[in-house]
Image (cartoon, rainbow, N blue to C red):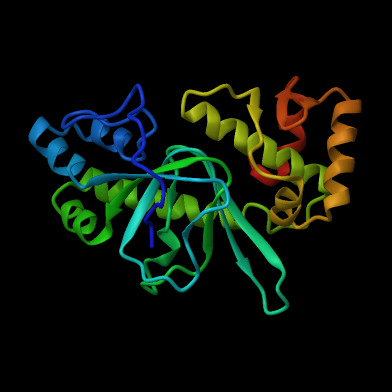
Length: 247
């Protein structure tokens, strides 16, 4: 699928060119580390197709759609999820600017889940066939693809253990904090674009448990909550997340 219905997006401030990638590009670090020259960067950059905006509630792809491209979130947030035989939704993850979606479709050539925009989303789309062919000539790009695949697996396993509701929520917030920081955003103050119900589904908790944990974290001075804006107030939350994040 990966086709928007809205008009073409207005270019953003750090839009790339033939020799430079956007600041949140999933492959920019690989290019810098690999020391690639301008001709090689141009060859990779011309594979990128900016698509969007996808509006809130609009699907980027649906389970079973044929796979032909991976995409990086350029702006906005994507939720991936599946629906079981009883019609219950299970959230699989949330994807922020600079993060890839569609990697789990590579083996079966079809998307195994749904992806939906939680707010206005713009994507950078990469033809997987072209990207795979280029990766054989650019080892840094190939290594980055492997890194992205392993990160995707790691995120799926993050909350598989027998952890408390407090530990799961702390790990979720600290993980978001680190992901925002890695892309140049504030690690201590950010907006949750996902609903409490979505967070509960992702963390395998009841929605009421999520609300109680938020209130308890506020009462204990770990966070400040203003509607969907979260502020992390100190290092104690990271300590609470340590067992889940294993660091």
